[in-house]
Image (cartoon, rainbow, N blue to C red):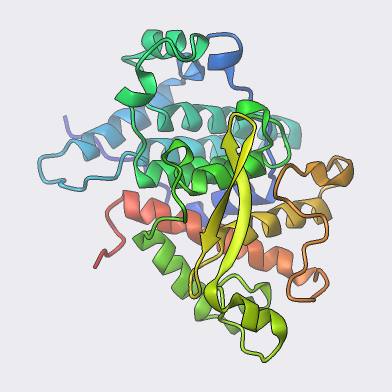
Length: 315
């Protein structure tokens, strides 16, 4: 019989994404690497039904979309948020963390048919072909980065904090890209910001702020950042003039949660590349930026979901 994909309505999407970003950061548990047991073994009947529905959509003969392999993880993540929203804040946080772990495994190629192989690969690093057999698409890298940004200051993959790993996956992780890849989702997000003058204070589009100061002149060619590169090394990445600065946005998200969360570790839990004295073109932190940052995070998530659902027009 035909399956219908249980995609949240627009109002539900807005509500769930607000909850998702308001309650961040979340501590992920990495069960598959820590104790050799995939989080997907604990999947509920409802979640399984959701995955079967999304799989039916992805494999439909009329569907020629090459990159909607993120639809399942996105829906599982939103479902985890919706099931936790009426519970206590502690239970809600646990539900959301579990949803992040499930989405994280799915991004890396784990599913109900290959759990045994995935658990072996996770507990025997370097002994299998898992990474080579499950290369990540640009969309998976994008969602992977968002999940680690939601992880925040908690220590996760590779012994790095979520913010550090978020920047690592912004440029493809092991692909070692020099800059963030162009993508319809990112282009639409840039348009969204440029169309709203109240967002310009954040200086997220390189060179978009007018002025004759030295900083504007120095930024004509772009910005440079140091990020983790694996094996304890660091490498440089670049953001060209006119591009959305996702590395600065990651720092802004970190700053946003430090200002609103009394449980932030001393020093903000900063790892490499996160500056405690971030200078937003000389502007001091403004309370209204928290809402703006959340609006951008929500829009990014909404655009990614629309892309996965084949609703985002691609030129």
